[in-house]
Amino acid sequence: MKMQRKLDRRSFFQTGALAGVSLTVGPAMMPSAFNSEESLVDQTPDSKTITSPKLPSKYALNLEPAKWIWYPSQRTLPNTFVLFRKEITLNYPLKQATGWILGDSRYLLEVNGQRVQWGPAPADPRYAEADPVDLTQLLKLGDNVIGITVLYYGLGDGTWPAGKPGLIFLLDLEFHNGQKQQIISDDQWHTALARCWRPGQYKRWYLRALQEEFDARLYPYGWSNPGFETDSSWIAPLILSGGADKPALNTDSSDYLNNSSGGGELTELRKRSVPMLLEHDVPVATLVESFSVSWHRPVTEYFEMVTPNAYSVNGSVEVELSASGDWVFELNEPGSGVVLLFEFKEQVVGWPYFSVSAPEGTTFELLVQEGHVPFKNGGEAIMNNHFNSWTRFTCKAGKNEFQEFDFESVKWLQLHVHNGEGEIRISKVGINRRCYNWPNPPVIRTSHQGLQKLANASLNTIFNNAQEVIADGMGRERQQYSGDIGHELHALYSVFGEYQ
Image 1 (cartoon, rainbow, N blue to C red):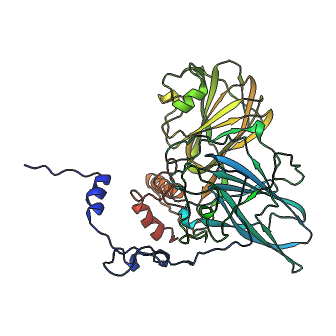
Image 2: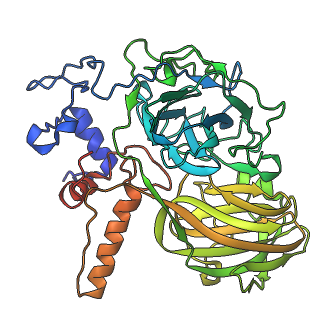
Image 3: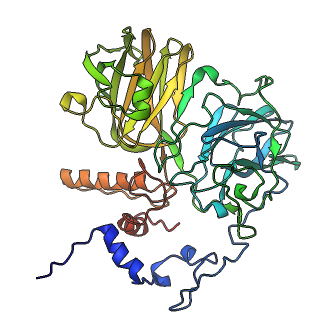
């Protein structure tokens, strides 16, 4: 008798959809935004004709007279960070300050030293989406500084398949006296190569571009505040040749990594198609355990190569909780490290952070995981796996405030401390959580404790897995992944009232 072969998900798609089985989605099943004029597929019945997109689309955006700018260079290494600084003086009370920003691959916008927003959302590089900005409440009379940190992935990841380095920015100012002014990206800014993040750093994983290592001793603290004095490391940016209505992919910036280009006229700069995400702070719930480890191989080798038998656990470390809420301990044994494991109340997505006072050169690996078994319960001591979910921070002398540049998916946060001698004082361990701005966030209440726990966990899963895109695990991937998310879409449509 011939046995019927059991199909896993991948085999099903290979033998089904790829073998000629078709799926038709009618207009009644989809909101109008998905039957848009940008569709590449002819919508006539039974048609399989691929047609060119109709440009300009309803999302088209032209940021003239702004220019695409970058650090003067003939090539840009992977995972390079560049700082852009613009001083502006406001002589009249401001009524409104709104505009657009896009940094390829990712940017962090600050005003007068204050974090404003991080972006952009993942998008087709041919139709890159600029984010809206509203600085009305952040700019003040007198001197102001707009500071933008731009990260260029280079090698790409699951959210960024191709592109070129660049920044474009436009801000329209309107004053109460009726006067107007424009702030644009041009050669009147100052830019610096941020060597606190080493240019050319390797990838974390094939779906994650940035393996972050940050050296606070090399960071120009205060650079995005008024009064900062630039030195010779700050120079005028390079104006890139490319239209303000086109993505960075269309500029003349050199892409020696992939030799990518914009595809001529079939490209378009677009407005962001979903709302900006919301951010709020979430502190860790508890310190679960602390212990020391002895290293038999160099620490950097372990984190680069995940060398087997690289360390052994010595035993617990006494960590004192001070009256101010700091975790305090001593780091004195050469060739050893101290590990502290923290747990959040629930799994969250966002930017982990911590503050520390430590001797100059003390090094921290911040590791995060969605699931973990503490060492005291039989789990691994160093919370590492093949996703390489760690970031390295090196301290300047005194107080340091560290935050990851890219966001993570976190239930467990671990700090491994080494390469220092003396008192270590850690405070404010937490995460800046990012959540989609839902039009109808649901509330589910039941008298059954178990069902309530299940409902809360289910909603939290949606909060974590639906950011700008819908994925089945933000810790490992951020691209639109069609395999596991159909059931999420049902919840988004019917419960959250979300169609974008």
